[in-house]
Length: 67
Image (spheres, one colour):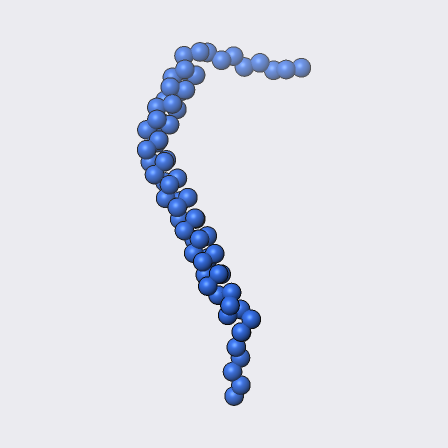
């Protein structure tokens, strides 16, 4: 039985491994940092939405139909 080997990719294996680990680490770091950012800024976003709701309720809005 003949064994099939891929000698051409053997030299690239460490390089491809490092590139793959870099991409995975980059993805997880973006995910973790954005999660932390939105966790800390959720309160301020909720306050801004509440202020917008109060302001929009204070002014009456009239509907008009354009010609």
